[in-house]
Image (spheres, rainbow, N blue to C red):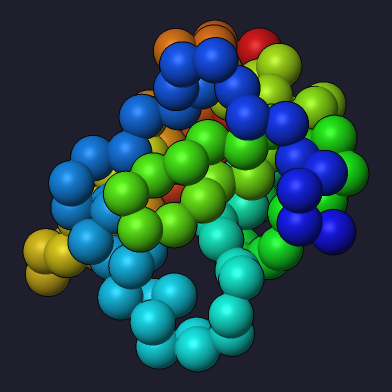
Length: 117
């Protein structure tokens, strides 16, 4: 379905250099041609909404954000909750993994994987 996603004017989200490096590494390890990073939101989690992060292909009506070496896909509904989001990555001993810094979240859970607005 490539070509059906719509490129957004300006960046909808920000990816830190550490996040970009880890995403590139994981996409290369995955090895599937044409995949990019999908970010989204779904109902659930201890605060009401949970983040979705996975590798996928473009779907119709996705917002498309082009990064240097990969594309980011965000479905229309999720874009309402993710606009302005910063995705970071930490690889420390106690703090490991992707971190969502969301200016739209009014409350987040202790693990940082769910939020409410």
